[in-house]
Image 1 (cartoon, one colour):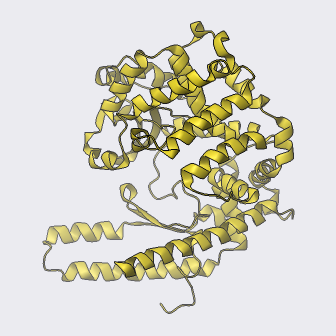
Image 2: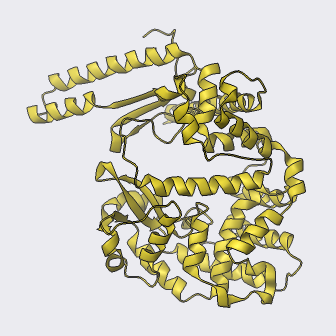
Length: 467
């Protein structure tokens, strides 16, 4: 046990070291000012504009809080906690509020999104299930701890930083938290989601209202949400519903909750995220919460945070630069040879096994031979033809306003996900995770292994080591 724990500790330390190196490389790539042919690509220019807007803390401070408050007031109907008793509940419409938030990629409480069908990996479907809570798991709400105390303090401090009308803040904070705590009682944990995976209900758009017979109109919500991506749903579009009891119980709770509490809660969930992209005095409020929640005392350097943000949202653009400067093509070739050798050895073991019948052997070998191999990076990134990269990121056009760029990315990601429903599934293409990560994994639904360029470093890989 001690040896295993030491091994795990050593592995985690190695991953941290490689992550640090990769992060610095990404910052170097996004800070570069050279103008060779690759640097002239519009996608790369915009990735660097996004990075520059993120590290310009002076400009973020000058921009102030108005861009966020303006969006909140004009699109979402305002945040009652800031308006005291003057907030007008007569205009409240839950479906409209959730639709507006979903246009910015928010799946608060209820989640709807397009994904590959778990029962048919060559098709897509609409997935409906539980969304997110402010604190990530049910257990955070069960007992009074430093974390949920800090969470409520985060709400209180953020609201007080944004308004002079503090008359109802204490009461609003209490009601927001109690509402979320009540919802959390029915929230499925990660373990429950995995162990009860077979409880997913499969239906169609035309039958959705009968399957999800709740006070909240999921059919109207889903139809209108997909229109934001110019996708008109059809009666026979497949739907997979998970965490059904959560959806039913939560719909009932919402139906009995006042408009003020609901509006306060959903806008709080939006604002708690936006705090990270606002002026320094607002960011510090969130940092105080993060220190308690994550147990950290040192904030990441701004350049690292900004590089990671660009990599998270424009990872294949960053990878185009990374593989040209840092990735050894020989590593890709050597790893493909290694995988082929392992595959052949595996097939030999199957053929020599005594415990498998012939039918099982044939199926196992067939699956082994058809395994997809995504090594290093997708081929198009290594090509001189940059059409696909430019087309994929054509909408990613940015300016010097970081918060403007944040909002734009949130909308782009929402549209991309809605449109994914109508895209053909290409099982052998590279997945969503870019090559610029320290990771490696197997995707069961696609029978595909992926070794991103980022992990082809010592001590995980050395092209000159004995085979």
